[in-house]
Image (cartoon, rainbow, N blue to C red):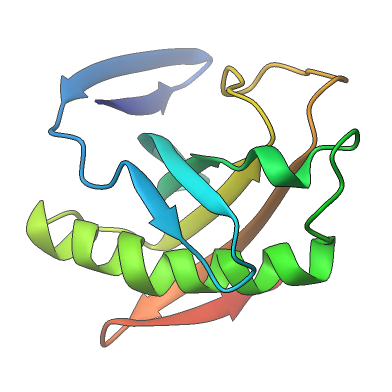
Length: 135
């Protein structure tokens, strides 16, 4: 698995890629669907260090539609607590914000894919507890 580190210096973005062992392959979540950790990205946004945990969750797809947005939101909260918090501790990562996302297929970060269904939520992690952060 690769960790992307992106820092903006003026109008220039500098990217560093580091390899980390894969922490979780398949994770069961409250909705019953199986999700796979696709990648963890680390970048700076408006002076804050953001960690992005990107999961593939085929059951949220528009064609499949087995898992609703409300159920996926519960899954995302679970993934923050069950995957992101331990991952942050294991790799001694620092974050101001944790973004957990699900897509029904692998997507490239930052690129539009009109065929993909994607859900995401942001959290502040304090004392190993994920606190939902409204955008």
